[in-house]
Image (cartoon, rainbow, N blue to C red):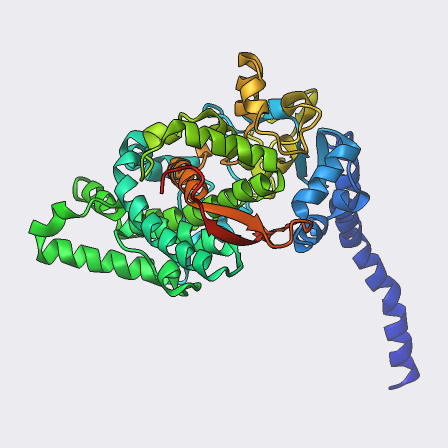
Length: 471
């Protein structure tokens, strides 16, 4: 290279530097100055890194304990905490009906489409994952009544069928004196129940006593088999009254409903119905075992009630202390451990003195609001089912409005009544059939969180329960 060429290259460096200044300035403004000094979020406290990048949120989730971090952040900073450049965690119970309402709907954030279904290489919206409120309404409207408790009670025999298998497995474990992970068995039970009421047939978790792979493929396979059966043998149509049968009846009366909607509805049943139910069932038993006085009070209520077997929903849900224990478990260990994000509308949103610009992501984490002392008392971090019985009418209404385990507003979990049906039926049956004990009572469980929270370390032994005089 000649000296002239070297000089020309060197001389071009200032020019290149000059060219690079505008884009660098734009990047600095967009990623540093604007997030830091954005007028509507400038007053919202939070960690410095969170104001600059969403990496902070990612790091919290990667710990597996984002719910615990969120609780501590709100204890430090107050009801509004900045979790990202455009994201605010809201810990005020009064904000729930504002952010999650049924009138001025706030769409879900860009977080949700990752939980959609994939068909032919494309993401297909589901009732849960779609951000489009009109799509959600169109997909939900045909099936909303199917999830009403008056309809769900017709599925009690299907729940009881899986209960019968579950209890026979537990009787064997009791006779063997074996210890086992309660959370695992309750997850198998909840998954088999939701498969039976959705398709009329269990997947086989309890029978095989292990996780069964390919759930999503099984859902599509059972849908195709049922469609073929209805086409080839229409006389058999009326004999099956599971969810899939009802969904196919709805499709038969409305030709605009595509097949993928039905597959999506079934998948939503299974994905949401198994995890959330198993988590709460485990939580109820765990906290009762950790609080013997609470266990004794519930057993006394069940004994006094002289319950039939199987226990029907109409009786179980009216037992006050059982009802309080289930609500307290939902409060203490909500199944979802991160904020349910919503996007502020075009006109922005005023919330408790803060004016948020359009497009700001706001979210409430149930783990945070469920520990609000103004709502649940100064002992809100402790298990005490009696709070639901002792509260006066106004306080109880506020407690129930703040109970956010299934979300709220127009996007509240469609299948929450399925969970309630299972929980109110199986918990009293378990406790009147078996006496539970923790293998290491001094050891606490662990709760891991990605989106759903998962419990580990609830190792138990059981004995057949004879003291209540039912068996």
